[in-house]
Length: 225
View 1 (cartoon, helix red, strand yellow):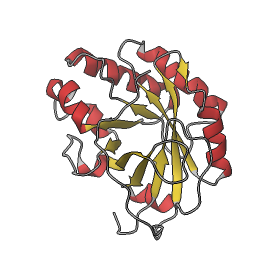
View 2: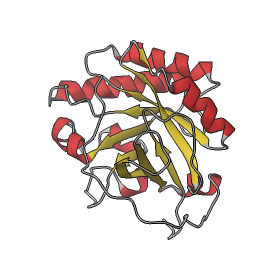
View 3: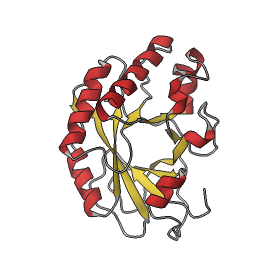
C-alpha cells in the first residue's frame, strides 16, 4: 500500500465520540456472537459512525458450539435492521479459543461462513490471526481449501507474521491492538486498508495526522463473553 494509508478502527466499547486529530475513514463494529448475543452497543456505534461520516462495517464473532445456520441468521437479522452490512462485505470473526484444534472445527467455521453467504448472496470477509489459525485450522485443511479464496482481514501487529492466505487476499490489516488512544473512552484497534478498490473508495491517498506513534501491544487479545 502507498506510504499514506487509509486508516480505520474497531472497538468493542467505543462510546461513539471521535476525538479530534484522527483521520479515520471507517469503523467496524462487533454486531453479534454465537446464536443469541447482540452487542448492546452496536446500534449506537453504527449510528454514531454514520453521523461522523465514517464508512461502517459489522462483524459476527463465531462460536464453535452454536449452530452455523442460527449464527448466520442472527447476524443477518441485525444487519437487516440497519439496512445491510455497510460499506464492507459481511464479516466473520474466526478465532474461538474454546474450540477444539481439529478438522471438525474447520468444518464448523466453514459451515457458518457458507450459511452467511447463502443469506447475503455475496462472499464473506474473514477475520482471523495467525496465532490462532496456525493451530486451530491450518493443520487440518489443504492449501486449496475455499477459505483461501475469501478475502482476509488479518490481525497482524508488528512484527509481521506469515499467514496461509495469498497476499492478494489480505485486504485489511489490524496493525495495532488495544491502543489506548488519547481522547477515546476505550481501547481501539487500528486498521489499514490493503485493497486497492476499497482504498480508493475510502478516499484515496490521505496524509496521516501528526503525532507520536502509539505503543504496539502484545498480539493475541480477544474478547470472550
